[in-house]
Length: 352
Ligand code: PHE
Image (cartoon, rainbow, N blue to C red):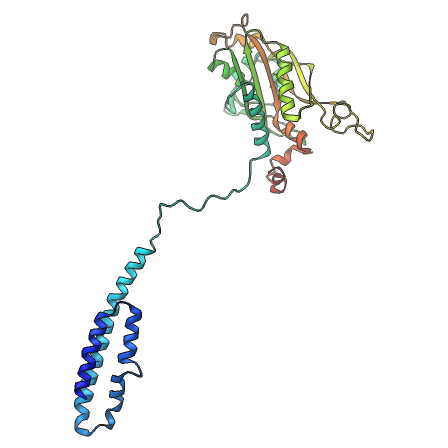
């Protein structure tokens, strides 16, 4: 019996030392120390042995049991550690990999989209896109645009002034970018300037902040006919192939002559009457829809940038300006301009 116990010790400890993984170790634990293990049976059978053998057999079986238990434990520790290490090495996350591709959320606002569409048309005609500040100096917003100080035309636009300085204001139109662009670039110049403008005004068709696109073309021999052709081309691109532009006399301090320009109504094809004989509600039966202001740049304006090469005796040209919201409302049948800025996604989603 004692020999057998020694065999179990030798065999068991060799097997435990050689175990390659925790699963195998668990099998060995069951085989050598489990309920059905030989050593367990020996311990259980001690009571039946002759009295003189019990002490020796029990002592040695218990010693072997403890030895194997201790071996199992230390081997388990070693195997656990190395398995954890190899798992960490295998499962390593490469933190330098790019994340999941960004999912498109939302879309460009209709006003931005309309602005960009106008930019595209004009860039196609050879115009450069330029920008100017929204907080502007009185000089650019008014004085250099031929509004002498104290001139009543300054009152036509309900201006927001910056309280600390009566000379600083929120630009009431994008026209100051005409002056800034001419200061930055000598003629010929073909530029458009999209951007936000501000006026003290608020109802269904006016917002204290809105968007305009300015256009300016100055060179030798540019005439009102060129303005007509440019507006025709631009309005066709925005409102559809069959459209025409019409100019009506108007007044702006910085253009002479000045006009307002209209687009032929795209709902009634310019007839003022719908197919069922009813008066067209979009153009109010007129056949034309007002889009913006324009004119030949006043020589007085060029006088403010004469030192930049704009000699009014040598160069001339036209300017135009129009409201982006108005164009978007017309094209998409939006009845109230304020809906663009309420940020109600149910409204904005319709223009994805
Ligand atoms: N700046 C004018 C406005 O806001 C529009 C305009 C631009 C008129 C250029 C003529 C030339 O009403």
